[in-house]
Length: 244
Image (cartoon, rainbow, N blue to C red; front, side):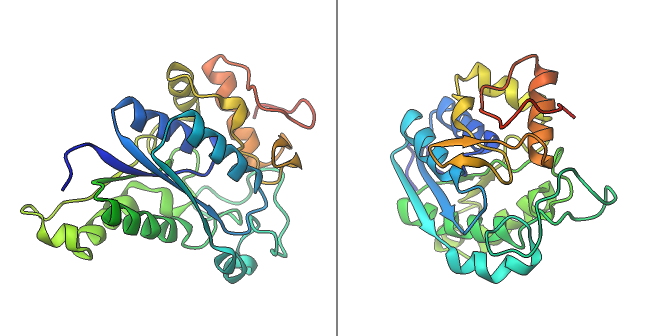
């Protein structure tokens, strides 16, 4: 294994992943960033991902075409363009219910691509902006899933099998148990340009100049996080939106 702190960062272009990238860079990682075009409604995130990759000085940034994946899961999620489901205006259902904004197996697929890249470039870490506090309905954002994937990663790769302790690759999720306000504060401290991040499930405008709706569950969580952190969200919105 290389000893120069190589890492793969899964970069969507949203607030959480941009902050995760900044944490990795602040800890001295040389970053290979990876984003995915899977037919998401919020494709403006990819433009933001490209901006963040350039601004934060990654070694390489790849955007992987997963349009077939988007078509496969379209009937089960509201977040892809071919979906028959509307994006909800607010969170619905019980706390234990998995919402329609969950994309089936998305993080499993993304982490698998990240694992392949990590082994190919001799990286020892895969970083992901998963958060279980605000998105507890998503099973692939929870600590137990991430811990299990790390075990799979080390059992199913040459790097893991050849490592003397059987743990060559780590899954890093520094935001997994932080509140949105804590994430906003961390991003501000690290100088992340949060005006060039997109959290909205269905932004309007153009990819280079998106306008967040301000009413979807993700926008509400983001606005509430900024308010709790004591900052004004620099992102552009269609209109002034409630913070909760």
